[in-house]
Image 1 (tube, one colour):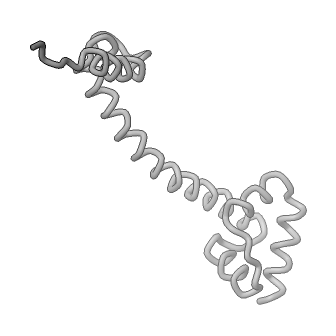
Image 2: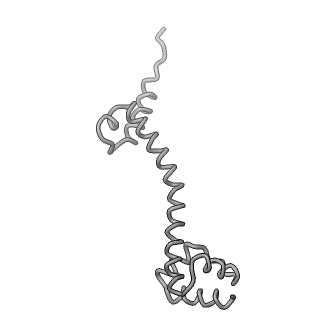
Image 3: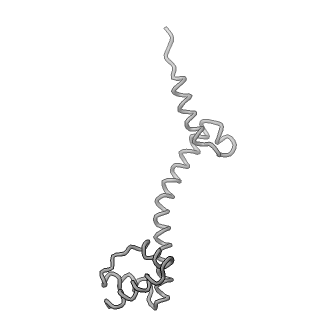
Length: 117
């Protein structure tokens, strides 16, 4: 009796990894073993960088807010304290967008925060 082989399933599995390695250089694209290692490594880096992107954007927003707040005579930490005292619950992302796209609205937020002092 003939033994069972997983030829089709194995070929599909290998083909999947080779497709994911499309655009890689050299044997990393063509050879299954190198392709699998390269793709799994890329997945690890992708996960790490998705986490890092959140930190990077928060740093960017804080830098922008610090620059915008200093134009109004306060530092970033003072700005956050004043906003907290005034009960203004805008997050850093929306505040930095305001500071960039609509400086007049940001100035009004600053006035409100300073008046709560």
